[in-house]
Image (tube, rainbow, N blue to C red; front, side, top):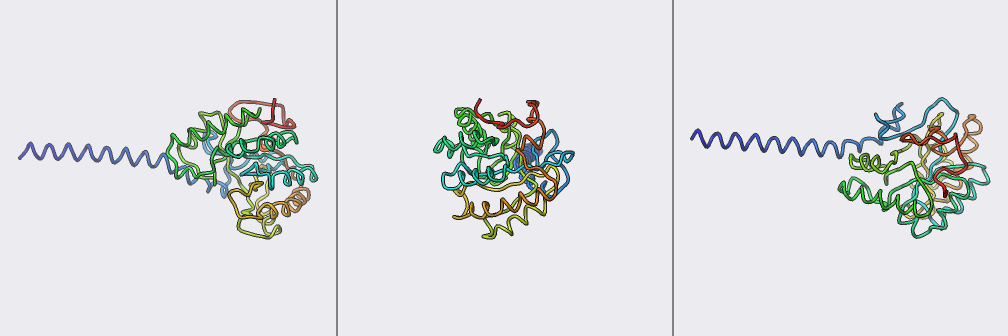
Length: 270
């Protein structure tokens, strides 16, 4: 009887230990998914710079960033609009789309914009195991490197961050970045409404999220962005804020890779 009770006790302790370990692993994997909430707080980054929402507020600069390209239907029009406004931005490109449209990747860089990584496939990290996340980042980086680009920044699809996201990005030498202002243009057909959402959250160091690609959003979304861009640029000018690349806002490339202020095309072919 005593032996049976001892076996049950040991089995119970072992089960509890495995349960605690599994719970800790799940917590480490999915707790970072709350990182998107950081856009509403005052912090610039998570500890150790694991995830960034905004840049330093010391300089009157704002980063314009675009996700989901390159898209032959809309990226050229966004590039033309930025040229007319004399604005430089950061483009978070999807690896699979970069392989399909390499000429657009080169055009983004040629026009003086910064190339960053949006992963290889536009799939939420909440639905992917850690090894898939790691492979996705590595393939996207290899694709961009093959096109002569050396990204420093990474934004996960949908802004969904897991523990695997942060570990894989750091291992790849990429800094994970989300945003502090966004237009949510997939929810509205009004450029004025989208611009107003962005303008409400403009501050020195703000990171603005818009989209140049329509592959993962409703048709016509880019037209809303094109209509909103002049309104956002006008608001920035009236507020005395300069729109620049993400590296321009952060003043130095992440993870210790320092460059001289804001070169014409960070992440561009060398």
